Length: 325
Length: 297
Image 1 (tube, chains in turn green, brown):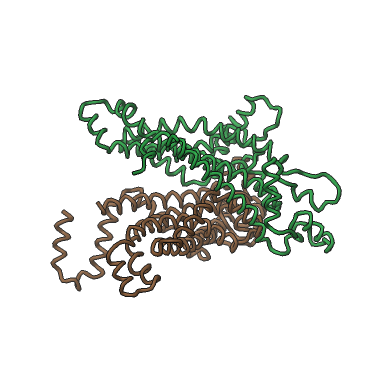
Image 2 (spheres, chains in turn brown, yellow):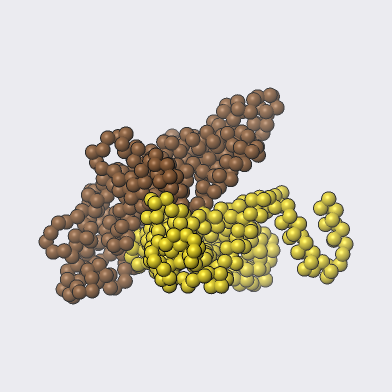
């Protein structure tokens, strides 16, 4: 078999195995539940019968392995179970976790991809520029600014942006409330500030890593050679350094997109954007476990997929990795 | 210049170098530190002083209602009051103690756990190493914040739970680093000699390996502290971390965020306090990494 294909398939298998183990962990965490959990959900006035009924409905009385198989079997078919918000209430409206996650996941993906589309080209550009003029004033300023932006909590950046771009100079809106039948341009306008916050956070990371990757390469002998033969700095970077830098850079991009998945949680809460991050935070404070588990699985799966993608791209773009001694 | 000074010192009998020699050497390194590193060190020192002397510095108690809600700056309350009428400045000062203290404790715990396991894995190799490393791989494949959210939803949020959860999740990174740097040291002859001498595992860890991997671990401690601090602040901001009435910067931002829409900068103060400390720490670590890697060459 083609060695590239084999390595890629190996990684793919490893990724799926990881996802499987992660799903087991997420399901098993319920075993750590304190005994009074049903009471905490149903309130102090719950009778023993209600508590027992709740535990049966949730499946706490069954063996963990059985419960896991039930859950994961449903997940594969797109059924994440029922929210606790509907359990306990007798006959009545049933809220399916999948219905709660679905539309919000789309919203989150919309926000994340808007941020990625701006951040990736911008950070590559800035990273190459900083590597080209390293130790110049430009490099130092960019270095300090990006270090500051990385070290600040997301909500700090978000509130500063709100302060200046929504309150002092009302250019954008601070509440990113979005509705299903909103025109595309209006949506973009509404999510401008959350997007900008995310861009600030990940551009700093990606730019620094791009710069490091290129500077690392610039120390290698073949670059020295092209410099000695009199090639111009820009030419050296674009023609000689960049082709070899793609692997680490793509890796960096995928890792940061994976980071974006998590960074989105805080940003969604600040701007009350109806995404999956906010759903998860709400569910955690209500201790609505099926929703928490569903969200966690979606987040973990996205994270693992992006990391997998980073691995695969690194392998494909670097033939040296395909021939271990 | 400094080369000749050092050789000059070497002639002095060892007994006379003593503490003074070390102090002046530290001073010489510090004097050459870039301004960003100086800025970082001064900021960290200020935070420490504030945290230690919080009760003396704060004009009002941490949790007492001393005025009306959302009183403006100036007059009786320098930075106004919060949503319940507690003095903002006092809570900011106590926040240095609570937020930074809790983050520091968590990082310490994560380091003790992570480096102990990492060194164990590096020294014993074989199946112990395999089991620990695979377990860490799996834990690291779930984003930390998400995992913390799942665990918090199950055990409920209290400071104790928070510290344990974040410390365990974060120790995975410490494990990876300490294991990989220790692997280079474990194969050294002096470690083998200690083992043949019949020294036990804790002794080998503490006396033979730990001193040799201290520099990367110290730098990592700074970075992990920043990360832990930001994670705990984020959780508190989401209302799932440090719970009221404890004064904490993350939850103070959340509680007073409404003021932003009136153009009031008060909620930015605790957020800025978080950012300033992590920036300062990053500057120092940056310089330290540069320094230690430069010395080795």
